[in-house]
Picture 1 (cartoon, rainbow, N blue to C red):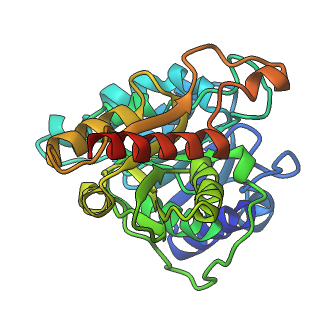
Picture 2: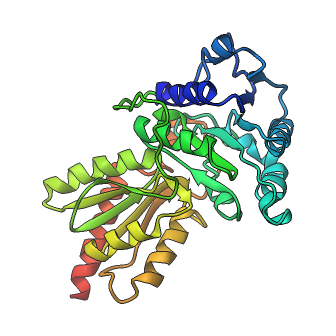
Picture 3: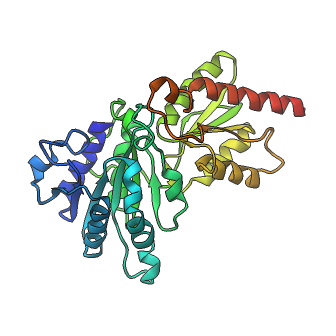
Length: 325
């Protein structure tokens, strides 16, 4: 995944002189993630190390975008994105509307989620649900290297502001990646990672891999689970999730964001609205607990989704469906 994101940034910088990167510790020798090596190749005029000021980073990106550039800003840890919330919510996301469509803010904000690494209450939060609520802002969360490259390239060249959420626990995830420049994946199109007939497991980012592991366990119990990877939360591919849920009639939604008012709540509400009377059981949600993230690994492990929790939720949907006859 790390190399796939690096390749997407590299090819975007090479393809268009308007693309530039800015953020904290993104230039060599400090760069250790997806931006490693890029300042050496393209120079510090296009890979800019910034002061520790999230508001300054995003504000500068918006100004550059208004002036015709295609900035890719990095907020090192998602917990810090609140410092730039005004720039994202009241400036970038509203610019198209406020100017009657004459001006947009084609910025990409990359940020990382450290959930599951025992980094404590203020360095581990999955806050994507905050930004799903903001009209004008696109929210993207890849689960595989291929999707990472294709979705990041789409985000960089999209005319609207995009929040691109990377999961640190997936940085070492391996998988095939198209090497050709210009490879993109359309925003707003989910992907069925595994077909199935008995229950639909819906996730994004790291939770997709937990769902796939759960599907393997369910298969041993002769339960066929379909795994749908949302890939983008906004725009949400309602058509794909409704089509899958209509076939299986049972659904479990999984995510690392807290369950209360999380993305799964919107997905469950959508499915119950679209498929009222067709679902065999209520939509189940498996998500993080509504508590500050503990720094102790043994405690942290208790609040996040696991394959076992997903299996149990899938079994509950089958049992409730059976009880209803």
